[in-house]
Length: 203
Ligand code: MLT
Image (cartoon, rainbow, N blue to C red; front, side, top):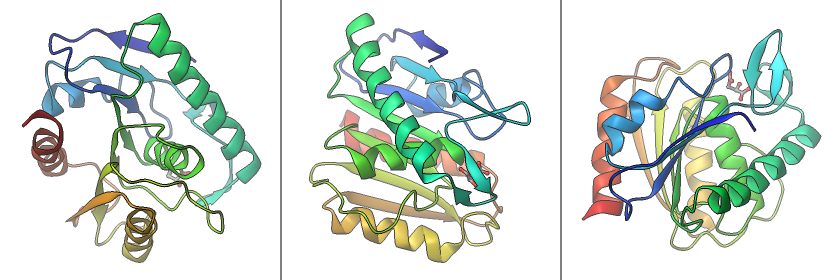
């Protein structure tokens, strides 16, 4: 997959796996990594699907309606890419934390739903429930931050709560943070997730 890798100065810190929103690319979230943990290594990936020229991580049939077959296929593709990148860049495969926005948060959620221990943690900004009606793997030891919007027109508050419940019922430790700026990713949300990250992984 097309990507950027930047080796950090704090090699004990988790590698930040950056996953952009629809229409973005691997450059978009790089500045966020600086805010979350400046010394962390960064692996920022571009989604392989194009929707009217806009990169995404998987196909959708309509706004908010995912192409499940493609979601499963693309989740496997990303999972395999992480295994390869860990070897190529000599990363600790067990110490990767995803940072995803919108469509990128959804593929990160899908990794968590479909694989055992694919990530050490995840910061999900404005995610949806990636799939329903499947058994979830044991998520004990996994830490997840969800940034949600009380007035997000794409990811409703009910869906944000549902995602929290699903992850928590599988054993994950979930922090749900609310903003009221629609589907936008805000500075406040990023700063709150940076504090959460420091508490989880650096103290
Ligand atoms: C998605 O398709 O993943 C969600 O609707 C979020 C978006 O990318 O608009």
